[in-house]
Length: 425
Image (cartoon, rainbow, N blue to C red; front, top):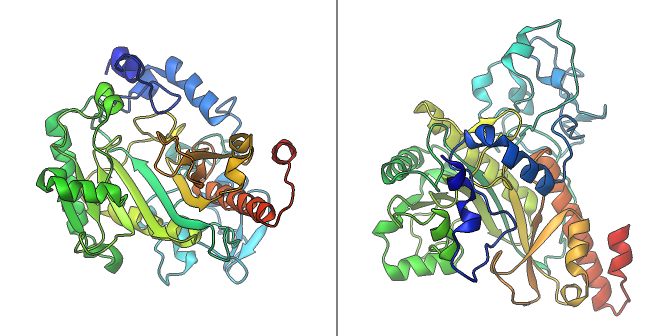
Protein backbone atom coordinates (compact mmCIF):
# COMPACT_ATOMS: atom_id res chain seq x y z
CA UNK A 1 0.00 0.00 0.00
CA UNK A 2 1.33 3.45 -0.94
CA UNK A 3 0.60 6.83 0.59
CA UNK A 4 -1.38 7.61 -2.56
CA UNK A 5 -3.64 4.64 -1.81
CA UNK A 6 -4.20 5.90 1.73
CA UNK A 7 -5.21 9.45 0.79
CA UNK A 8 -7.14 8.57 -2.37
CA UNK A 9 -10.57 8.59 -0.64
CA UNK A 10 -10.13 12.28 0.13
CA UNK A 11 -8.73 13.30 -3.25
CA UNK A 12 -10.31 11.20 -5.98
CA UNK A 13 -13.94 12.21 -5.62
CA UNK A 14 -15.81 13.66 -8.60
CA UNK A 15 -16.00 17.44 -8.81
CA UNK A 16 -18.51 18.84 -6.35
CA UNK A 17 -18.92 15.62 -4.36
CA UNK A 18 -18.27 15.44 -0.64
CA UNK A 19 -17.07 12.48 1.41
CA UNK A 20 -19.67 11.26 3.93
CA UNK A 21 -17.33 11.68 6.88
CA UNK A 22 -14.70 14.04 8.17
CA UNK A 23 -11.72 11.79 7.41
CA UNK A 24 -10.45 11.38 3.86
CA UNK A 25 -7.99 8.52 4.44
CA UNK A 26 -8.41 4.74 4.49
CA UNK A 27 -5.75 2.18 5.35
CA UNK A 28 -4.95 -0.37 2.66
CA UNK A 29 -3.61 -2.96 5.08
CA UNK A 30 -2.66 -3.42 8.73
CA UNK A 31 0.92 -2.27 8.12
CA UNK A 32 -0.32 1.20 7.17
CA UNK A 33 -0.81 1.97 10.86
CA UNK A 34 2.94 1.46 11.35
CA UNK A 35 4.41 2.66 8.06
CA UNK A 36 2.25 5.80 7.85
CA UNK A 37 2.03 6.39 11.58
CA UNK A 38 3.09 10.04 11.24
CA UNK A 39 0.00 10.67 9.12
CA UNK A 40 -2.55 8.42 10.86
CA UNK A 41 -1.67 8.94 14.53
CA UNK A 42 -2.63 12.65 14.61
CA UNK A 43 -5.90 11.83 12.83
CA UNK A 44 -6.67 9.08 15.33
CA UNK A 45 -5.80 11.24 18.33
CA UNK A 46 -7.88 14.19 17.12
CA UNK A 47 -10.91 12.12 16.15
CA UNK A 48 -10.96 10.11 19.37
CA UNK A 49 -10.13 13.09 21.55
CA UNK A 50 -6.99 11.69 23.13
CA UNK A 51 -3.72 13.53 23.65
CA UNK A 52 -1.43 10.57 24.10
CA UNK A 53 -1.38 6.80 23.88
CA UNK A 54 0.43 6.72 27.23
CA UNK A 55 -2.39 7.95 29.43
CA UNK A 56 -5.31 5.61 28.83
CA UNK A 57 -7.02 4.00 31.76
CA UNK A 58 -10.60 2.84 31.50
CA UNK A 59 -12.09 2.79 35.02
CA UNK A 60 -14.19 -0.26 34.12
CA UNK A 61 -11.23 -2.37 33.03
CA UNK A 62 -9.45 -4.74 35.42
CA UNK A 63 -5.93 -3.88 36.51
CA UNK A 64 -3.12 -5.59 34.65
CA UNK A 65 -2.41 -8.04 37.45
CA UNK A 66 -5.99 -9.27 37.37
CA UNK A 67 -5.26 -11.39 34.33
CA UNK A 68 -1.84 -12.58 35.48
CA UNK A 69 -1.87 -16.35 35.18
CA UNK A 70 0.26 -16.73 38.28
CA UNK A 71 -1.84 -14.49 40.50
CA UNK A 72 -4.74 -15.65 42.60
CA UNK A 73 -8.22 -14.70 41.52
CA UNK A 74 -9.20 -11.43 43.10
CA UNK A 75 -11.21 -11.60 46.26
CA UNK A 76 -11.73 -15.37 46.21
CA UNK A 77 -14.98 -17.14 45.42
CA UNK A 78 -17.17 -15.34 42.95
CA UNK A 79 -16.01 -11.87 43.93
CA UNK A 80 -14.44 -9.56 41.35
CA UNK A 81 -12.30 -6.47 41.85
CA UNK A 82 -12.06 -4.04 38.98
CA UNK A 83 -10.04 -0.90 38.31
CA UNK A 84 -10.89 1.68 40.92
CA UNK A 85 -10.93 -0.90 43.70
CA UNK A 86 -14.69 -1.51 43.80
CA UNK A 87 -15.79 -5.08 44.35
CA UNK A 88 -18.69 -6.83 42.68
CA UNK A 89 -20.09 -10.27 43.29
CA UNK A 90 -22.24 -12.50 41.11
CA UNK A 91 -25.13 -12.04 43.52
CA UNK A 92 -25.49 -8.29 43.15
CA UNK A 93 -24.02 -7.62 39.71
CA UNK A 94 -25.76 -7.80 36.36
CA UNK A 95 -22.95 -9.35 34.34
CA UNK A 96 -22.61 -10.02 30.67
CA UNK A 97 -21.21 -13.52 30.18
CA UNK A 98 -18.92 -14.61 27.42
CA UNK A 99 -21.06 -17.43 26.13
CA UNK A 100 -24.43 -16.01 27.00
CA UNK A 101 -25.56 -19.35 28.45
CA UNK A 102 -25.65 -20.72 31.98
CA UNK A 103 -21.92 -21.14 32.37
CA UNK A 104 -20.39 -19.66 35.50
CA UNK A 105 -18.52 -16.41 35.18
CA UNK A 106 -15.76 -18.17 37.07
CA UNK A 107 -14.98 -20.11 33.88
CA UNK A 108 -13.99 -16.89 32.18
CA UNK A 109 -10.91 -16.60 34.38
CA UNK A 110 -9.54 -20.12 33.90
CA UNK A 111 -5.85 -20.42 33.12
CA UNK A 112 -6.58 -21.96 29.72
CA UNK A 113 -6.43 -18.95 27.41
CA UNK A 114 -7.94 -20.91 24.52
CA UNK A 115 -11.29 -20.79 26.31
CA UNK A 116 -11.33 -16.99 26.03
CA UNK A 117 -12.01 -16.38 22.40
CA UNK A 118 -11.53 -12.62 22.37
CA UNK A 119 -9.12 -12.00 25.25
CA UNK A 120 -8.54 -8.72 26.97
CA UNK A 121 -5.09 -8.04 25.65
CA UNK A 122 -3.85 -6.24 28.70
CA UNK A 123 -0.41 -7.69 29.18
CA UNK A 124 2.04 -9.17 26.73
CA UNK A 125 3.54 -12.62 27.11
CA UNK A 126 6.88 -11.08 27.99
CA UNK A 127 5.35 -9.08 30.82
CA UNK A 128 3.50 -12.15 32.01
CA UNK A 129 6.72 -14.16 32.32
CA UNK A 130 8.72 -11.34 33.85
CA UNK A 131 7.65 -11.31 37.50
CA UNK A 132 10.16 -8.59 38.44
CA UNK A 133 9.01 -6.03 35.89
CA UNK A 134 7.20 -3.15 37.61
CA UNK A 135 3.47 -3.01 37.02
CA UNK A 136 1.95 0.09 35.47
CA UNK A 137 -1.49 1.39 34.69
CA UNK A 138 -3.15 0.33 31.46
CA UNK A 139 -1.49 2.10 28.57
CA UNK A 140 -2.96 0.31 25.59
CA UNK A 141 -6.35 -0.14 24.06
CA UNK A 142 -8.13 -3.13 25.56
CA UNK A 143 -11.17 -5.01 24.36
CA UNK A 144 -13.32 -6.80 26.91
CA UNK A 145 -16.26 -7.90 24.81
CA UNK A 146 -15.97 -11.51 25.96
CA UNK A 147 -15.24 -10.88 29.62
CA UNK A 148 -17.89 -10.49 32.31
CA UNK A 149 -17.98 -6.84 33.30
CA UNK A 150 -20.89 -4.83 34.55
CA UNK A 151 -23.29 -3.39 32.04
CA UNK A 152 -25.67 -0.83 33.45
CA UNK A 153 -29.09 -2.13 34.44
CA UNK A 154 -30.65 1.20 33.50
CA UNK A 155 -33.19 1.03 30.67
CA UNK A 156 -32.91 3.93 28.26
CA UNK A 157 -36.59 3.71 27.28
CA UNK A 158 -38.46 1.75 29.99
CA UNK A 159 -41.88 2.64 28.53
CA UNK A 160 -40.89 1.52 25.01
CA UNK A 161 -42.29 4.71 23.43
CA UNK A 162 -39.22 6.37 21.92
CA UNK A 163 -36.60 3.83 20.80
CA UNK A 164 -37.71 2.13 17.59
CA UNK A 165 -34.75 -0.18 17.15
CA UNK A 166 -31.31 -0.97 18.51
CA UNK A 167 -28.27 -1.91 16.44
CA UNK A 168 -24.74 -2.70 17.59
CA UNK A 169 -22.03 -3.54 15.11
CA UNK A 170 -18.34 -4.36 15.12
CA UNK A 171 -15.84 -4.17 12.29
CA UNK A 172 -13.13 -6.78 11.90
CA UNK A 173 -10.24 -7.31 9.50
CA UNK A 174 -8.47 -10.60 8.88
CA UNK A 175 -4.77 -10.72 9.59
CA UNK A 176 -2.60 -11.18 6.51
CA UNK A 177 -5.07 -9.91 3.89
CA UNK A 178 -5.08 -6.43 2.42
CA UNK A 179 -8.01 -4.22 3.38
CA UNK A 180 -10.90 -3.63 0.90
CA UNK A 181 -9.53 -0.45 -0.72
CA UNK A 182 -6.52 -2.35 -2.08
CA UNK A 183 -7.41 -6.04 -1.91
CA UNK A 184 -7.53 -8.07 -5.10
CA UNK A 185 -10.48 -9.96 -6.51
CA UNK A 186 -8.91 -13.26 -5.44
CA UNK A 187 -8.50 -11.94 -1.88
CA UNK A 188 -12.16 -10.96 -1.75
CA UNK A 189 -13.19 -14.39 -2.96
CA UNK A 190 -10.91 -15.99 -0.38
CA UNK A 191 -12.55 -14.04 2.44
CA UNK A 192 -16.01 -14.84 1.09
CA UNK A 193 -15.30 -18.58 0.96
CA UNK A 194 -13.70 -18.54 4.42
CA UNK A 195 -16.68 -16.87 6.10
CA UNK A 196 -19.10 -19.17 4.30
CA UNK A 197 -17.20 -22.16 5.68
CA UNK A 198 -17.15 -20.69 9.19
CA UNK A 199 -20.84 -19.78 9.31
CA UNK A 200 -21.83 -23.17 7.91
CA UNK A 201 -20.15 -24.76 10.93
CA UNK A 202 -21.69 -22.58 13.66
CA UNK A 203 -22.83 -24.70 16.61
CA UNK A 204 -24.98 -22.39 18.72
CA UNK A 205 -28.71 -22.86 18.02
CA UNK A 206 -29.16 -19.11 17.61
CA UNK A 207 -26.66 -18.97 14.74
CA UNK A 208 -26.44 -22.48 13.23
CA UNK A 209 -29.60 -22.30 11.08
CA UNK A 210 -28.54 -19.29 9.08
CA UNK A 211 -28.32 -18.29 5.44
CA UNK A 212 -25.13 -17.34 3.60
CA UNK A 213 -25.91 -15.38 0.46
CA UNK A 214 -23.32 -13.98 -1.99
CA UNK A 215 -24.59 -10.79 -3.61
CA UNK A 216 -23.86 -12.25 -7.05
CA UNK A 217 -26.53 -14.87 -6.37
CA UNK A 218 -29.21 -12.28 -5.53
CA UNK A 219 -31.75 -10.92 -7.96
CA UNK A 220 -31.97 -7.13 -8.28
CA UNK A 221 -35.32 -7.16 -6.49
CA UNK A 222 -33.99 -9.27 -3.63
CA UNK A 223 -30.91 -7.06 -3.32
CA UNK A 224 -32.94 -3.84 -3.05
CA UNK A 225 -35.41 -5.43 -0.64
CA UNK A 226 -32.63 -6.46 1.76
CA UNK A 227 -31.07 -2.98 1.56
CA UNK A 228 -34.41 -1.28 2.29
CA UNK A 229 -34.91 -3.57 5.30
CA UNK A 230 -31.43 -2.61 6.60
CA UNK A 231 -30.32 -6.25 6.40
CA UNK A 232 -27.76 -5.64 3.63
CA UNK A 233 -25.29 -2.83 3.00
CA UNK A 234 -25.84 -0.27 0.24
CA UNK A 235 -24.60 -0.67 -3.29
CA UNK A 236 -21.55 1.48 -4.14
CA UNK A 237 -21.88 5.24 -4.40
CA UNK A 238 -19.47 7.77 -5.87
CA UNK A 239 -17.40 7.90 -2.68
CA UNK A 240 -16.96 4.12 -2.24
CA UNK A 241 -16.08 3.77 -5.92
CA UNK A 242 -13.51 6.57 -5.76
CA UNK A 243 -12.00 5.10 -2.59
CA UNK A 244 -11.59 1.66 -4.15
CA UNK A 245 -14.19 -0.01 -1.94
CA UNK A 246 -16.48 -0.63 -4.91
CA UNK A 247 -13.91 -2.32 -7.11
CA UNK A 248 -15.13 -5.57 -8.76
CA UNK A 249 -18.59 -5.06 -7.28
CA UNK A 250 -20.44 -7.23 -6.40
CA UNK A 251 -17.87 -10.02 -6.78
CA UNK A 252 -16.71 -11.36 -3.41
CA UNK A 253 -19.39 -9.62 -1.35
CA UNK A 254 -21.82 -11.60 0.75
CA UNK A 255 -24.29 -11.61 3.63
CA UNK A 256 -24.77 -14.05 6.48
CA UNK A 257 -28.05 -13.86 8.41
CA UNK A 258 -29.25 -16.14 11.20
CA UNK A 259 -32.57 -17.07 9.56
CA UNK A 260 -33.43 -19.71 6.99
CA UNK A 261 -35.77 -17.61 4.82
CA UNK A 262 -34.76 -13.98 4.33
CA UNK A 263 -37.88 -13.23 2.33
CA UNK A 264 -40.20 -14.12 5.23
CA UNK A 265 -38.02 -13.74 8.33
CA UNK A 266 -36.07 -10.85 9.83
CA UNK A 267 -32.66 -11.79 11.27
CA UNK A 268 -31.24 -10.24 14.41
CA UNK A 269 -27.62 -11.24 13.72
CA UNK A 270 -25.79 -10.52 10.47
CA UNK A 271 -22.29 -10.52 9.00
CA UNK A 272 -21.48 -8.29 6.04
CA UNK A 273 -18.56 -9.58 3.99
CA UNK A 274 -16.17 -7.28 2.11
CA UNK A 275 -17.98 -3.99 2.40
CA UNK A 276 -15.81 -1.21 3.93
CA UNK A 277 -14.05 -3.82 6.08
CA UNK A 278 -13.56 -7.52 5.63
CA UNK A 279 -16.33 -8.08 8.16
CA UNK A 280 -19.09 -6.03 9.72
CA UNK A 281 -20.75 -8.07 12.47
CA UNK A 282 -24.00 -6.76 13.90
CA UNK A 283 -27.10 -7.41 15.91
CA UNK A 284 -30.30 -5.49 15.11
CA UNK A 285 -33.60 -5.71 16.98
CA UNK A 286 -36.76 -3.68 17.39
CA UNK A 287 -37.14 -1.82 20.66
CA UNK A 288 -34.62 -0.57 23.18
CA UNK A 289 -33.20 -3.61 24.97
CA UNK A 290 -29.61 -2.50 24.44
CA UNK A 291 -28.17 -4.98 26.94
CA UNK A 292 -29.74 -7.99 25.21
CA UNK A 293 -28.57 -6.84 21.78
CA UNK A 294 -25.04 -6.48 23.13
CA UNK A 295 -25.13 -10.00 24.60
CA UNK A 296 -26.33 -11.56 21.32
CA UNK A 297 -23.63 -9.75 19.36
CA UNK A 298 -20.97 -10.86 21.81
CA UNK A 299 -22.00 -14.50 21.48
CA UNK A 300 -21.96 -14.31 17.69
CA UNK A 301 -18.47 -12.81 17.61
CA UNK A 302 -17.24 -15.57 19.88
CA UNK A 303 -18.78 -18.22 17.62
CA UNK A 304 -17.15 -16.73 14.51
CA UNK A 305 -13.74 -16.29 16.09
CA UNK A 306 -13.73 -19.88 17.30
CA UNK A 307 -14.30 -21.12 13.75
CA UNK A 308 -11.65 -18.80 12.35
CA UNK A 309 -9.06 -20.03 14.85
CA UNK A 310 -9.81 -23.63 13.93
CA UNK A 311 -8.75 -22.66 10.40
CA UNK A 312 -5.65 -20.76 11.56
CA UNK A 313 -7.09 -17.30 10.96
CA UNK A 314 -7.38 -14.41 13.37
CA UNK A 315 -8.45 -10.79 13.42
CA UNK A 316 -5.94 -8.01 12.72
CA UNK A 317 -5.05 -6.53 16.10
CA UNK A 318 -2.53 -4.02 17.41
CA UNK A 319 -1.69 -3.79 21.12
CA UNK A 320 -1.60 0.00 20.87
CA UNK A 321 -4.62 0.65 18.67
CA UNK A 322 -6.85 -2.36 19.26
CA UNK A 323 -8.64 -3.96 16.32
CA UNK A 324 -7.55 -2.51 12.98
CA UNK A 325 -9.98 -1.36 10.31
CA UNK A 326 -9.96 0.44 6.98
CA UNK A 327 -10.97 3.76 8.51
CA UNK A 328 -8.84 5.13 11.38
CA UNK A 329 -12.00 6.48 13.03
CA UNK A 330 -13.07 2.90 13.78
CA UNK A 331 -9.92 1.39 15.29
CA UNK A 332 -10.06 0.23 18.90
CA UNK A 333 -13.27 -1.49 19.85
CA UNK A 334 -14.59 -0.81 16.30
CA UNK A 335 -17.98 -0.80 17.96
CA UNK A 336 -20.88 1.41 16.96
CA UNK A 337 -23.88 1.00 19.24
CA UNK A 338 -26.89 2.95 18.00
CA UNK A 339 -30.60 3.42 18.47
CA UNK A 340 -33.26 4.87 16.20
CA UNK A 341 -35.07 7.15 18.61
CA UNK A 342 -38.01 9.54 18.22
CA UNK A 343 -37.03 13.02 19.36
CA UNK A 344 -39.57 15.09 17.43
CA UNK A 345 -39.47 18.13 19.72
CA UNK A 346 -35.87 17.99 20.94
CA UNK A 347 -34.53 17.48 17.42
CA UNK A 348 -36.01 20.79 16.26
CA UNK A 349 -34.19 22.90 18.84
CA UNK A 350 -31.08 24.88 17.92
CA UNK A 351 -27.83 23.30 19.11
CA UNK A 352 -29.38 19.84 19.30
CA UNK A 353 -26.25 18.45 17.63
CA UNK A 354 -24.02 20.15 20.20
CA UNK A 355 -26.09 18.66 23.02
CA UNK A 356 -25.64 15.17 21.61
CA UNK A 357 -21.90 15.68 21.24
CA UNK A 358 -21.64 16.86 24.86
CA UNK A 359 -23.03 13.46 25.90
CA UNK A 360 -20.17 11.80 23.94
CA UNK A 361 -22.60 10.60 21.30
CA UNK A 362 -23.03 11.32 17.61
CA UNK A 363 -26.21 11.82 15.63
CA UNK A 364 -27.21 10.93 12.10
CA UNK A 365 -30.50 11.07 10.26
CA UNK A 366 -32.70 8.00 10.17
CA UNK A 367 -31.14 6.74 6.96
CA UNK A 368 -27.46 7.01 7.83
CA UNK A 369 -24.53 9.34 7.63
CA UNK A 370 -25.56 10.93 4.31
CA UNK A 371 -29.15 11.63 5.42
CA UNK A 372 -30.05 15.30 5.81
CA UNK A 373 -33.84 14.99 6.17
CA UNK A 374 -35.34 15.92 9.54
CA UNK A 375 -37.89 13.18 10.18
CA UNK A 376 -37.87 13.52 13.96
CA UNK A 377 -36.21 10.09 14.12
CA UNK A 378 -32.49 10.10 14.76
CA UNK A 379 -29.72 7.53 14.71
CA UNK A 380 -27.87 8.13 17.98
CA UNK A 381 -24.65 6.25 18.70
CA UNK A 382 -21.43 6.30 20.68
CA UNK A 383 -18.86 8.65 19.17
CA UNK A 384 -15.84 7.04 20.83
CA UNK A 385 -14.21 3.81 19.67
CA UNK A 386 -10.73 3.88 21.17
CA UNK A 387 -9.23 3.83 24.64
CA UNK A 388 -12.37 2.57 26.37
CA UNK A 389 -13.91 -0.86 26.65
CA UNK A 390 -17.04 -2.01 24.84
CA UNK A 391 -18.86 -2.21 28.17
CA UNK A 392 -17.92 1.36 29.04
CA UNK A 393 -19.15 2.63 25.67
CA UNK A 394 -22.46 0.80 26.03
CA UNK A 395 -22.95 2.41 29.43
CA UNK A 396 -22.18 5.87 28.01
CA UNK A 397 -24.74 5.38 25.25
CA UNK A 398 -27.46 4.13 27.62
CA UNK A 399 -26.94 7.11 29.95
CA UNK A 400 -26.83 9.61 27.08
CA UNK A 401 -29.92 8.32 25.28
CA UNK A 402 -31.77 8.21 28.62
CA UNK A 403 -30.98 11.93 29.05
CA UNK A 404 -32.24 12.77 25.56
CA UNK A 405 -35.49 10.90 26.13
CA UNK A 406 -35.92 12.65 29.47
CA UNK A 407 -35.60 16.04 27.74
CA UNK A 408 -38.06 14.99 25.03
CA UNK A 409 -40.60 14.09 27.72
CA UNK A 410 -40.16 17.48 29.34
CA UNK A 411 -40.77 19.24 26.04
CA UNK A 412 -43.87 17.12 25.43
CA UNK A 413 -45.17 18.25 28.84
CA UNK A 414 -44.75 21.90 27.81
CA UNK A 415 -41.65 22.67 29.86
CA UNK A 416 -38.96 25.06 28.69
CA UNK A 417 -35.62 23.33 28.16
CA UNK A 418 -32.35 25.23 27.84
CA UNK A 419 -30.22 22.69 26.02
CA UNK A 420 -27.28 25.12 25.81
CA UNK A 421 -27.00 25.11 29.60
CA UNK A 422 -27.45 21.34 29.73
CA UNK A 423 -24.72 20.86 27.15
CA UNK A 424 -22.32 23.12 29.09
CA UNK A 425 -22.94 21.15 32.29
